[in-house]
Length: 245
Image 1 (cartoon, one colour):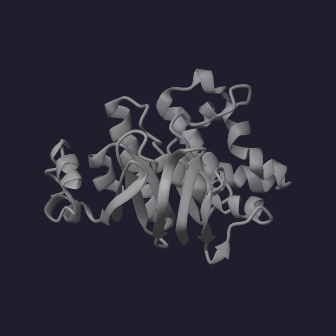
Image 2: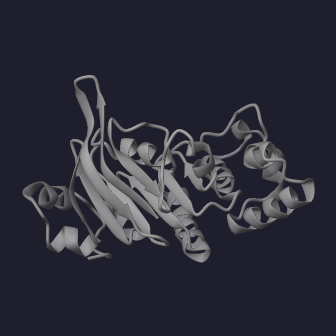
């Protein structure tokens, strides 16, 4: 679905991402994980065109990402951020339907899609009329997921989508979000700092360090066949992985 071919990102003399090539398989969930500042969010933002790589190219579904087609390709990608990224002056309904209205969908089509997605993410109808400040953290993330799915994109990019939630709410949303992704057959690229979450979601996991990919594989690969001492140390520092290994 996505091919990152020799991409890198420099900010002056600082290197946020060293030369990196990565493939995101269609219909699978690929997780990117690593310490803070390792370049994982930069990698995600390059994929969606929010950051232009200093070097290299991005292919989305076989099409080269360029300034000329960036807007049309973005309509085929849903993007969920850590804190939801909802506009505070708009109701949940207005946030979710923003792009559909911009694209001049008719009211019946919008309402039908809204009902399908509200049911999918288990969001009560009353929440759609509230502003983000009157929603809980879990409700805001459900709204954000609805917005990302509204145009039925082929791919979802998620940057720490559940990282700001308390453990109980996070646990429930993890279960629902994985079920949604599998039910819809979406290609997913997920950034997280939590290896247990990576193991729960990921068909493959890419571990990064200091702007460089150090290993890509399954959770079993990273635990039992670490590619370096850093991978071994990183995995040893994790907790709650016994279920996956």
